[in-house]
Image (cartoon, rainbow, N blue to C red; front, side):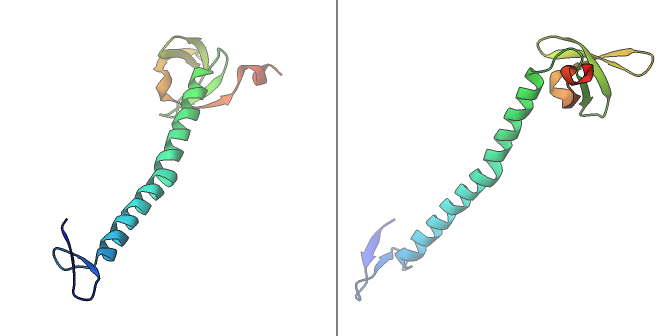
Length: 112
């Protein structure tokens, strides 16, 4: 962007606009980027971290709810999957750990 000085001494761009309007526009873009980071990206990263910690701290006996709404008790755990037991017939289903929405009752709490 080429700058030239008008006869009155103000800095202007090559197209004749005021340099301060350009600075103001760039400043507002930076402000929007900062707002986007602090109010959208940062909370999302925190939420993902909490979900990963919850999935990594699963233990046998925990009662869980899947993303699809299936409720069951954890029977066994492997690296990426776990087996849950549902219903009165003790149906066993193998699911991905990433499909677990929340832990309803921890195994330690269920024993009390």
